[in-house]
Length: 90
Image (cartoon, rainbow, N blue to C red; front, side, top):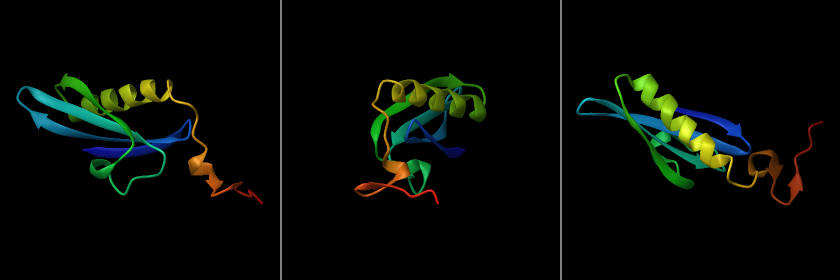
């Protein structure tokens, strides 16, 4: 299972799950640009959840960890701007 959401405070949250003995672990990362898929996201840190009995629980836990880390980063305007200027909304 995988999901890319955002932007949240200017960062995209890419998360995916992997099956391990005893359940599922979620992995996530924050990125200033929308990654092509959750597995190839490159950005700020790699975060992992604990082991959960369901994929959805592991995915949500990983996304939550990434959002907590985003709270510590300065806001990113990259998804909302054209290089060198603010995007025109008209």
